[in-house]
Length: 364
Image (cartoon, rainbow, N blue to C red; front, side, top):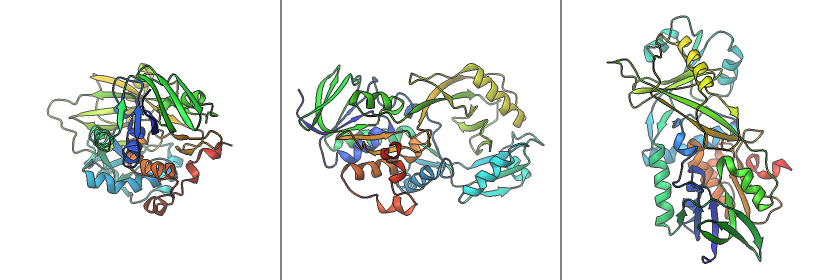
C-alpha cells in the first residue's frame, strides 16, 4: 500500500495534468491514467487552435483568461480565422456576430486574398478573427507533466481505475499498478468521466462523448498554405487549417458515440470533404491519413468543475467539449482554487465567470 496521498487525479490528459501541476505545489498528488502514455485520447488529437470567440459564454471567458499564460509561455503562433457565410447560413452569421469580440467583417475579395482557395461566389459574407492562434499542445501538456514531477507529484500510466471505495475519510483506489489512498479524488477522466463517477457511487452528469473526424490533405507541388488563416463556414459544416505544409480538413462532425479509442468515420469524412470542395477551387485527390477524437459534453455545453454535492471528497473536472486545450490554463487554476476552498481567481471572475455555472450542483 502506498503512503496516503492528499489528492489522486484520474486522467493525465490536459485537464488532469494541468490541475495536478497546480495542486502538487501544496500537496501530495498522484495522477493515474489508463493508457500507456498521457494524452493518448483527446489531448493528443486536438486541432490545436486558440479561438476566444468559439464556444458558449463560459468557455469564451475561460479562453480569454488563459491568454496571458499562453503568451508568457510561448505556446501560441498567431493564425487568423476566416469565417465564411454561404447562402442559407444567415442565422448562424447573426449568432456569431452577436457574441463576438474583436472580429470584423471583410470583403470577399479580401477573404480570397487571405485564403486563395476560396471559390468565387461561394461566400456572401466573410468575417476575420485576428485574435486566434495555433497552440503548441505537446509543449503545453509536457510542461504540465514536468511541473507535476518537479513539485514532487507522480504520474502512473497503464493504471485504469478498477474500484473506488471511501472509508475512514479516505478514498481507496484499486488499479493494476496497486492500491492507492487519498483524501480527495479529482475526476478528470475525459470521456470516461461518468464511468469513474459510477465507481465512486456518484450520480452521472449525462456526459456524452462526440466524435470529431480529421483528414490530412496534401497540397499540390509548390503550394505552401502555412500563411493562410484557419477557415470554415459559420454553420460549422466544415473547416480547414494549415499544418506542417498540409491542410487539416474536418466535417466538424459531432456524432454521439460511446467512450472508446476513436477513429474517423469514412462516410462522414467524405461528406465533409465534399462540402469543403464546394467552397474551394481545389480538388482533393488524396487523403494522406486521418484520425478521430472524442469531445465530451454535458447537456448545457459547459464543463463540470467542482465538488460533488453528495459524495465527500469527489471533485468533477470533465465535459470540456472541444475546448479543453484552449481553456486549460484558466480552468485548471479555477479547479485548483475550488479544491483548496478558495474563491474564483480574480482575473477569471473579471471575464464574467463565477464558477457557479460550472458547478455539478446544477444537475440536482
